[in-house]
Structure formats: C-alpha cells, structure tokens
Length: 271
Image (tube, rainbow, N blue to C red; front, side, top):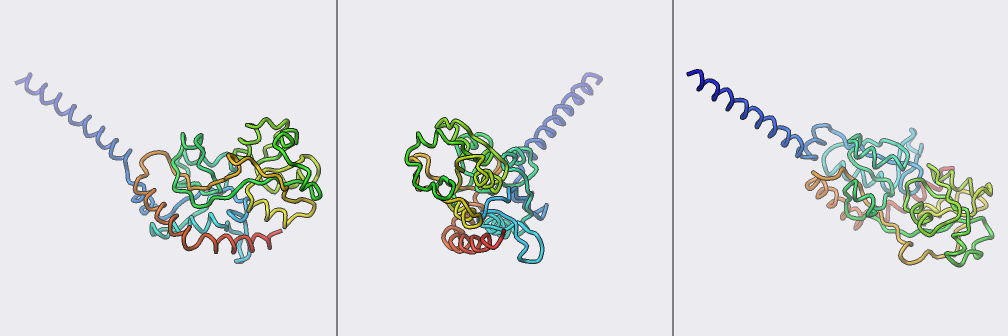
C-alpha cells in the first residue's frame, strides 16, 4: 500500500511538471495579435528626426510624431483594431528595445540588413530610395569618385546603413551622431565635409537649411539603394507579420505616394 502511494505521488509530480512545461511552452508561443488586442495598443518605436518618414509637428495644435512611417504604423494598428502609440528613442537603441520586448514594432526608416536580421524579423519592404551625399553649397560637382569620398570627413546617423557604408569603404573620418539635423549642422559649420543620408531626407534638409546641397556624386550601384521595412521581435510572428504585410502591400499600392507628398510638404513647414 505504501509503495502504491509512492508510485502515485511520483506520477502526480511527473504530470505536474509536464503541465508546467506545457503552460510555459504555450505562453512562449502566445499569439502576438491576441496579445496586442488584449493590450489595446500597438507600441511603435521611432527616432523622430528623419523627415518625411518620422518627425515632430504641432500643426494639429499639439506636438505629435507624424510622417510616412507614422501613417503606416497607424494603418497597421487600425487593421488589428487598436491604437498606435509612439515611443521615441535614439536610432541605435531601436533594435535593443524590440529585443527587450519594450515595444511591439520598429518603424523608423530602418533597412532590413543581413546583420539586423540576426536579431529581429522584418516585414516586406514598404519603401525603396537611394543614398546621397550632402556637401557645402558650391561643392556639388567637386566629388566624382569613391576614393575622394574616402578622404572626406563624413557624418552619418549612428547605427545607420550609411555608417556601415562609410566604414566599409574606409573613410578616413566618420562622425556618427544621434540626430540627422545635427549632422547637417556639423556640415554647415565646417566640422565635416559631407553627410551620407537617404535622398528624401536629404532633400528636405537641403530645402530647410541654407549653405548645403546634394552632391552630384553617385554611390556605387551595390550601395546606392536603401530599402525600408518594419522590424518585429524575432520568432513567434507568423500571423502578426501576415497582417503587417497585408497592410504594407495596400499602403504601397494606394497610400505611399500621397503620404510622401503630404509629409514632405508638412516637413518643409517645420523649421
């Protein structure tokens, strides 16, 4: 009888441990969409210094994050049936915040590079632009080769693909700063010779700031393109990504061009 009780107790413990393991596994594979619906909001990480993709505007009467990326994030939230909440941080801290589960997505002009794919998952690409070199006004035709770029003091946004490119080609001096406006001021003040940035972003900054211009130098074909995608936490995202990609497809087909035009015009008003 005593032996039977011990066997029963042992079986109960095994079953109990099995249930704990199952519950842990169930929790681990929890549906992200259900989690978001329960929470009632989509927390979106941005570095709001990259017009027309993300920037600040007070046109509505209050300071808010706007831009192409903000429009797309709101469209994703609407598809899920919740509200988008923007959480600002430095660009080089975005992936870390996602990995730490502090935010639900990153949408901040981020390129889905192979290095980043080791840490996060990406949606389909929603925008493809190109890289340009911003220089002092009057210097537009001076830079003709990549070797000349290597000899320049180049400013880039910290953690960006432009920083990767500048280091890859061996620029003699690479100054990485948090915010794009700071890069432009470094150029205007003569502390650097050029700024590498996305073409749409560069154009807006050139229009807003006197004394700088877009160089006629063209980056090599392999480095000129900049694609942008939405980053989400790695793994456990199949249904979540399906919804995001559905919205991305619709946004590209119907809303992207209008959003670019509207936000470029709005950004031009922001000084």
